[in-house]
Image (cartoon, rainbow, N blue to C red):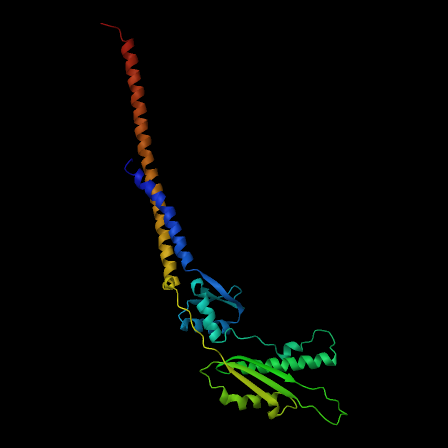
Length: 276
């Protein structure tokens, strides 16, 4: 029994240390939410863009696929932001005319209807232009003068388009098509009244990956699980070793007590026996 006690005590002391080690390993591979409330298409594009840059990323949902979140290794947050900014992700969200003119029971004034229509048209054109390959940011500003029908001179409509694109994209060749698209989307707009400003994005200098972030997250999880199982096994073995030693100790104690009582009874019999 006594040769098992040091082993049991050592096992019980080592188990908490192994649990702490497992916790440290698990925390070293923790992921944090970088973006939330994303569509599945957006989160898939972001995961692919990050994996291409060597960033450990994954997607997660908490509402059965209605919205998604992007999870990134906490040691690669900066690199993830740089990679997404270079790709213009996540995509900007735009309003559409259907949502703007949804019937809500309130009667709008003609001025409100006009402003809402201009804004909705600008949003839809911006959304359309942002889907061109290589375009990072697209914005369209529309001006529709409120001309007096009795006036002799009429102010023409105009539109200004701003595009920010990746340097490896040839957006300049698409400027005539962009102007034509905007012209046919706005009533009373001519080709010459559409201006397009295209700006190339600055190149992104990616930060160096941390040296400690080379181990994949799944491998860290496996190591943490192995350490936890080892700690649990040591605790079980330690408890079995101590419990296994108790019956022997109890039996030895019982034999000693019985021997003591028997010896006392024999001594009394000797004193009562008559002398020869």
